[in-house]
Image (cartoon, rainbow over all chains, first blue to last red; front, side, top):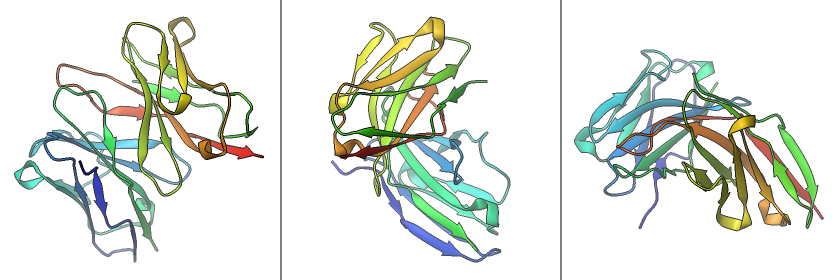
Length: 113
Length: 116
């Protein structure tokens, strides 16, 4: 089966622009998570979807970040407007309901200049 | 709040030598513990996990980890390192419920360099 897929793999944008990251979880995985790693820091939780519902968004940095998961399939994470401190690697992970192993995507490296 | 400490940011070992990566956690209840590896250009891959039972956990690629509650540690070990083990390793702690995997807290990561 296909793994978790993230698009794009890299994105370089200017401060103030908008960027949308996409995550396609493994088919049938109800749980979808977004994480972010700022350079030199820990990988930090952003939010958790169960199907199309946001279960926990306690890690979202501020209201410039908007995550959606329409139809409970793929998810998007939009940053608008982007700031320099948003640079980092954004990871997506998915799991089946009741399963304790998360499968991670390769990540999207976002650079804001 | 849960937290994870990986005291070694970089480790260099010779190929064939043994390896131990340290991890200490802070968590109020019985933790779910994980080790992930990220090879260059790849996503995070689960090496092993501990939820309960035997405190010595076997994982993929010849890795094992031992849960020591008294020391709040979950160190990763491998008896003989291969050049392909060069990667970044992340220890993580999480809480589970009937739904399974929940958000985890990661350590800062340990970069492993393997020299001939």
